[in-house]
Length: 107
Image (cartoon, rainbow, N blue to C red; front, side, top):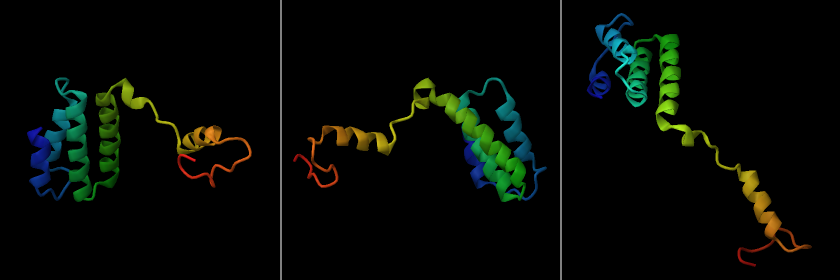
């Protein structure tokens, strides 16, 4: 979204800057989808952070992360197995009496 890119070029020195109000207003519009809200929210967070409004920036980043997860869809919420799960699977394939750590690959 162009407004998100524009915010990267703008110099904002106070939380009452019109660009911040414009970003917030665009985020709140119902026509903005989750991906656009995420992009605008991260831009808002960067602008707020740059002018020292750290708590507001943190809130903007949190909302942007929620919108980003929402835009990714349900499949993005599936977590891959942990590294320990891979290790347990590898140990399961080692013949009895052999140490998995000492077994060379393919051996």
